[in-house]
Length: 309
Figure 1 (cartoon, rainbow, N blue to C red):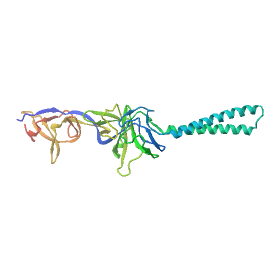
Figure 2 (cartoon, rainbow, N blue to C red):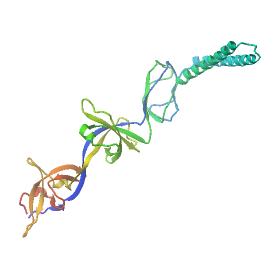
Figure 3 (cartoon, rainbow, N blue to C red):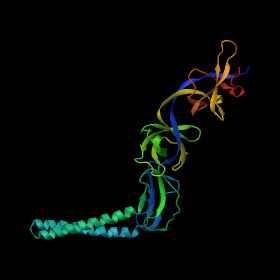
Figure 4 (cartoon, rainbow, N blue to C red):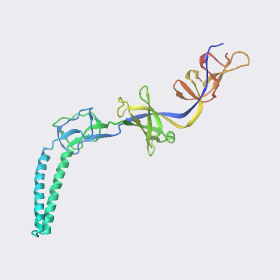
């Protein structure tokens, strides 16, 4: 007689699953560019630094606009004073209505010129639109920047990140918003939630892009990192689970040995063909070929054959 370890196949329910490679995306991400031409006056930001919303990143020289603004402010004050005197004179009918309207128009033009120059000066101060991490850049004080120069990137820092991945068409049809997916990053798996599905499939691959949200991501996870995404879909499938050591592979298929009791003597081994499914840790899911409660030879199955005691 052979010495083996016999276990009882336990019932198990699983769903079909597939894997995909996902890409990590920051909740907010922008490419920092200058809207106006100019010479760099200061660069408070540092490559790789963390900046808060509204923090100054880069400032272009605006000395010409500052001088023009002072002139425009003086013109605005004169236009405002002229308008007030003209309005007082109009009360006594000392000026015509046309003269009052012209004074008002000049005042409005002066105010508009001040606002225009203030807007130009503000556009020459590049600030962070949200809390983010600064990418790499190689610019220096005094360097001239043409309009639309790509300076660096800003990757938003938040309490969550997005994971974008593609699913085959038949899988995407059975995945709903709000379902959980498993991310494999290192040893510990992480749970994310599907929050969006694309409105159309890719014309070439026929796959559908999906997006999951991962809350409290680990610090080592960076935007554009790749992660393994495990997606379960479809209804529950009933079967049994057995240790991986019970599975035997051969040219004719996959099988296990079960212990069949006899009226007299020791149990004998009987080879039974099975259909295996997903791996459950150290166990294998058997979709067909075994029933719950059957006695399976788990350890030592390599020592037995059909009819062994």
